[in-house]
Image (cartoon, rainbow, N blue to C red; front, side):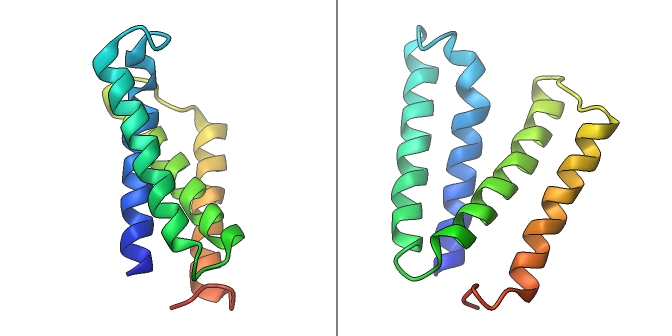
Length: 109
């Protein structure tokens, strides 16, 4: 169940972060509401997950996956295509998340 909550927290954070630009400095009510709700849901779900998983591991997975997904959303919907060094860096982040999940004894499976 922890991984489901973590996945939902990642999705909520990606939605919120991807909507930030549309808030126009928090001057537009609907996008601002989406951002506030997304981050609220994300942090609520994270608070559940860290009860039984290491906060450092949870944060590494959450932030790493969030970075990768927000970059993908930015490339597809906002036409903010990353350059080669950014892609390499993001690939390293993905590798780190995979290593943590597959090999760390700190992760509960």
